Amino acid sequence: MATLSHQIIAVTANNLRSVPQRWGISAVIVIGIAVTVAVLVSVLAMAAGFGKTLANTGRADRALVLRGGSQSELASTLSRDNALTIMDARGVRKGADGKSIASAEMVAIVSLKQKNTGTKANVTLRGVGPKAFELRPEIKITAGRMFRPAVRELIVGKSALAQFEGLELGGHLTFHQGEWNVVGIFETGGDSHESELMADAETVLSAYRRNLFQNVIVLLESPQSFDAFKDALTTNPTLSVDVKRETEYYAEQSKQLSKLLFFVAYIVGGIMAVGAVFGALNTMYSAVSSRSLEIATLRAIGFGALPVVVSVFVEAMLLALIGGVLGALAAWMFFNGNAVNTLGANFTQVVFQLTVTPALAVSGIVLACIIGLVGGLFPAIRAARLPIAAALRAA
Amino acid sequence: MAAIVSLRNVVKRYTRGKHSVEVLHGLNLDIETGDFVALMGPSGSGKTTLLNLIGGLDTASGGEVSVAGERIDSLSGGQLAKWRARHVGFVFQFYNLLPQLSAERNVELPLLLTSLSAAQRKKNVQTALAIVGLSDRAKHKPTELSGGQAQRVAIARALVSDPTLLVCDEPTGDLDRATADEILGLLQSLNREQG
Image 1 (tube, rainbow over the protein chains, first blue to last red):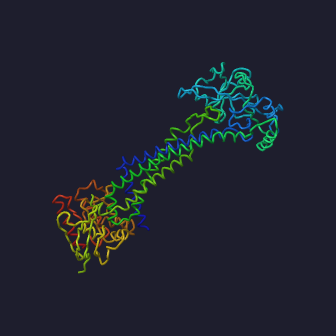
Image 2: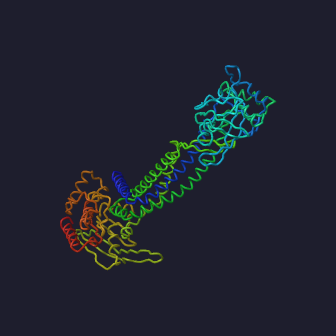
Image 3: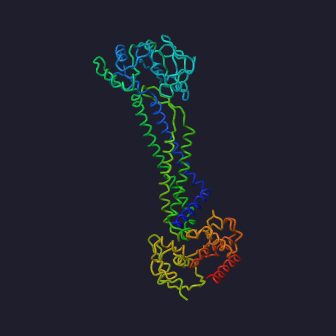
């Protein structure tokens, strides 16, 4: 056993020492795998970032009520009577003034120019009730002030400000035949509301000449009050509504896009990985070919086939590992934290940050090792089967 | 004296595409212990083929090959590798030194197949390099040696594990006349003193 380990160490060390002499061809495997891993990790980072943004939106003790059968806020309508019934239902927490902590909201779409592309995209304008900020304590005004009711004023989410033109504090927006003033900037700790504009619900309804809300959001007495609240609404014959925990609603909204992104990541990553395997095979076959005399000499001296196989494998794995680490590092350096936006549930843009998590980086490196393993396997077998006499004669 | 190498009715055929070429046709040969034998013949006459069979680098298509009383024509690839490590030292025309390793590391290679300690390996390497007169070149890489010096290192590598036989395939083929004479002289004196 001692001699076998000596053989493996000696042949592998010698092989690795010769890598710098073959750096050009070795770079093929490193770059091929680095690009594959960078693409895979970046797309997965997109899915992770989008999922994280929507997962951060909502609390278990808040419930969202939509018209029955509505898949999203935009497709829902609730009358004022219905909104009042919902806000007064059992299980809703009362504020210090004895009124329900709830907000009947209207969601509208505003078309704004994107800073990075110059093209227009939809942004959510959320008209909120007077209790909206007691309902959502995570909303913090970071610049300017809160909008006033009955005046065309709005506040802008931090992510929306970063992505769209004309949302700076003190700016004016013209839509729906009226001018709106930006009076404040808010943040919510990174959830999807940061991609929105918010204003007084009655003012938005009036501007859009509507009298119907899209949803009602309530703060429950506790997360356990949800069932009682839901029962109270679904057993009320005057209402036809869907009741969901806020967290559940946003998780459902993110599911489709996350699925699509994971699908794209694994399909594109898979195709690139196949290409990288061929690159690795090419590199390692070249490595074996250029070392055929050395391998034949070692075999002639008496070294076994196993140390040769291990040495080729170790080289392939090491190069793949370098490629994998470089790819994950590139994805992290160039994409982690980058804000991008995509179409959300209300046909409006949700701004989110690409998130290269350690788990994603590890997934990329594992993929790199698999590519190295497959790419090293056949060349290693060829090296082991190299006819010694023929290889010596070829010299 | 007993034959250290014995070949009986040895046949070697190579298959090239659809054609089979017979290089050795029922060869019988005995080499005695301590012999210094040179094979001479035109190109393609089978000199290297015969050396490969004696050295266990290739297997015969027919007949018997015995070295030191052991039949090697029926050994598997793995068994042959172990057998070569114990019994054969090779010297090649183009030295076949590993370019990344120093002279002493090249010479040490066959000893990695033994159970000798690192200290014992070092001692044996120093002895082998001293025998070929290259103690002062131990740390040099093959590219830093002349052709003659590189072949001396290769001879030291072939000798270091004290093999049963030394197989040299055109050991002077890449050297100028003076250096070739020097290498042949070294091999002859080694044969006289240690063969």
